[in-house]
Image (cartoon, rainbow, N blue to C red; front, side, top):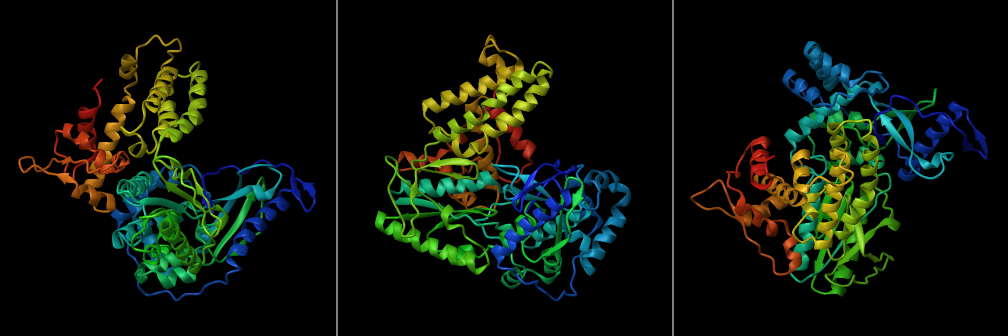
Length: 557
């Protein structure tokens, strides 16, 4: 179940229940509860409650830890079943940190209050008719104070078990993101193609993945110290939920499986739950994961052998997921086979057919690693934002318009830029990007008649051009990966970097590609570091790197 921010219940309306229409809020609330809980129970085959023995060991939190964790939480005004805003806790922190620390240590020793494990569920419409309960998904709100406790547990897990999830997992981990996951996926694909091998990638879809995490399996398969296992099992067992709809509240029900998707600990627990995937698949496949999204890249010398390897790996993958209680939606398995010319035709024994493109963590990846389709779709999807800003410009000033354009337009268009915004983009793609880029700036500035030259727009808006941004974001990501120890791509960069003895804190990268597609391997497109004239190898503050990269690649306005 997702976790979200809701202060008001959805408005009452007609719903189709038992062959008739009703606006009875209490009846609708209970119907939502039956649907949400019933779906999970059907998939989990009515999992029985799990009883476990609490260890005498427990975590101890310091005032500094509690202060730092609470300060890192966003100052939100939403409330859970306790009706306490996170904003209130943060603003009161200096005066309550001692008592809050004492309370958190009591919870760590004695267990979580049952009220902390009670989720208030709101129905959120997702598609099609609003009259059908099946067209809604559950959004969970938890108590603000319980979120702080979860955050403290997460902090302890990150310190005590920094790499327990496996190196293939990028979800919600320090120095990792969807972009690092996509870069590793792109690198694995491009490396296979550059070496002349037949290369493919598949992804599996899991039904209600977070909702099917089994407490008893988690307890058995994870090697977690007892002091950490206590609060985790506390969170996963004896959970309850109720649905809030309009002014009505459903009955309270227990649920025996799953963790709240969107909660602080949910993604971490799911990653720990699936950590053994890598040891259950062949050693020569490349696995890239972000939370419950996993992509497996496979290479082979010929197409028949590739087909066999894909099928065998898929079977092992499905077997592993089923062994930990996951339900694989086999009809949604996606497969893509890469080729620089025509899309290969391949069909597996289970009926899965190779596609010409797949959607991976928000990017459209095509069979020939051409990023023009992704760029075209993104520009088309965001064009309405530019039109809305032009309309709003009548009532808001230039600074406000630029904030909207920056967050809503540029944030979407340039998402994952380190992956796709490369010199390999064709001239048509660059023209589309530049045209859309300056159209957005003109909308924010109010230059509807296109009288202001582009160079002046750059100065007024203080925005980098697309090519400047391409160099900046690529160099920034490379420095983070090189100086970090958490990713396989970072290791590759360190191997492919030449460091001059006279300038030991700088380095340049050599292009080892054999074919054009090989230039999409991240290390092979870092020739731009020949222009980087500051010390970047080592531990530096983000501001230091950011300011020096701006001086290197972006014209100072």
